Length: 380
Image (cartoon, rainbow, N blue to C red; front, side):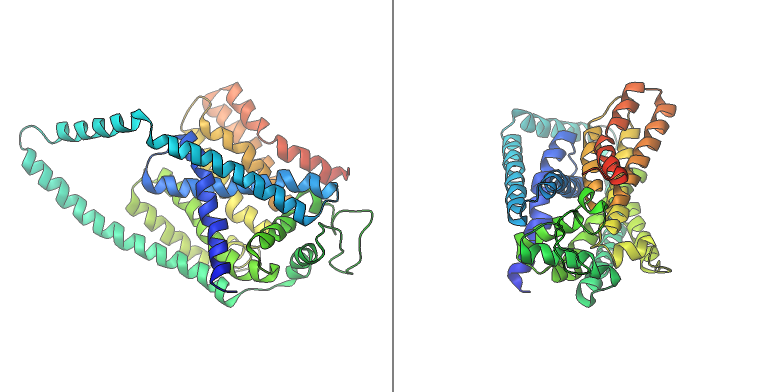
């Protein structure tokens, strides 16, 4: 594993997701600098996972090769990147951008006029200066804690019994150029089924990992136990950052304290192998851990944003995408995303009494419903 592998992972899990996510940032009309980056990162990853689910399930059922699936996934990622390029490029040539800047300047000039302007301006600057110091200190502390949590599992690794199935399936796919056709226990070719368990086809997370390994040219064990946690843990904290911005009304000092508090809780949360601390910091390479640490927090983030408005909002367009992404990572993702959407739809209806909005939220669980039917019935 060298610099080229690290650079490839950085491109796949930072640059490409952020670039694709700019489509959603523009659609959601997010303007704050930090929130633009983190929301683009989050929505980009969710979109990439959803594309993986949409592509892999039918191709596995059709017994296609891994190479063909990788080609289709890369093609779709390229299409999204081109769309994002068109949107971002058009943003800078939109006349409204210049007028927005001029209006902002006019507002600032108006605010600083009047009696005792110099005195008020000085008091504001003094208070802002004191707060900015604490904000910077807490921000650096939060960043160091997050980096530490990402570095430890990447450097020291964590290997458990799940390697015998997950990593084995990924290795078989990469080596034999097949998808879910080799039994990870006996290494025999399976003629009549897809995957060791029925949910493997409905939630082909291991095949998505195998596709990523092909793209970045890394062995599945190296991918899962070193570089993937190093990138995925900060992505999960990006979701927590966005949630904190809503809970604390964009007060960055409180948001950074929130991240520090979460970090301390998660670091000391290894009371069993199934706590959120264990899932995030030790087992994030597993699909079920990704469902717990990333998919569920993303849903909560969207619920918070949707609850702030009575009518249908733009964030609701992301709910079906999260349904596809949750279905990819695990059978637990299929079930829990469906349950959360059903519960939140009911809560939103009780709060706003908007039947159309509630129905739209429930309809967002349709992708999970399709995969759940297969999961439970065993229909090929």
